[in-house]
Length: 195
Image 1 (cartoon, rainbow, N blue to C red):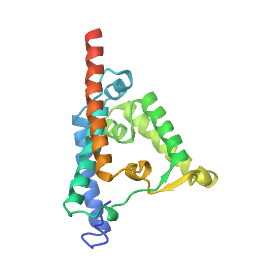
Image 2: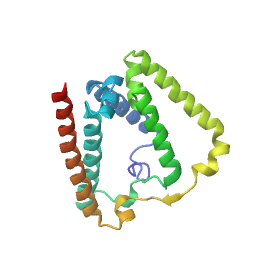
Image 3: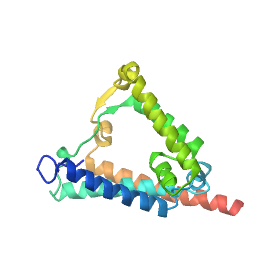
C-alpha cells in the first residue's frame, strides 16, 4: 500500500516474498490469539468474549496513529498511500453478507484459513464455502458489474466525509475506541457474573 514500487525499493518477486512472510506471521498470531476457534469468534456476537472486537479496534487505531504521526513528522506523504474508492451501496450489502457469514459460520476469511491450516473441519468447510462464493461472484460479475460500481464516492475518508480536521478525526476515533474497550469490559464482566 505504500509507494515502494514507485520508488523502486522492490518489484513483484520481492513483494511476493514479503506477502508470504507477512501472511505466515499474521496467521500465526491469529492462531495464538485463539482466532482459529469458531466458538471464540462467535462468542463476540453473544457478548461473552469481545476479544475480536478489542483486537481489531486496537489494530485500527495503531495503524491510524502510526500514519498520523509519521505524516506529522514528515516521514510519510499520506497522498501517496493507496486509499481504495468507496462504493457505498455495494459495500454496505457486501458488509451485511460478510457479517451474515461470520455469524452463521463463526469465521471470517482469515480466521477460516487459520482454522483449516490447523486441521479443523469446520474451517475447511467455511474455506470451501468462501472459495465457492468467490467463484460464483466471478461468474456473475458481468451481470453484477453495474451494481458493483454504483454509488461511487471516490477515495472517501472520515475526515473528508464529516468535514473535520484530520487530527480531530484521529482523536475522535481513538476516543471511540477507548469507550468501546470500556463498554466491552463491562459487557464481558456482566456475562461472567451471570454464569
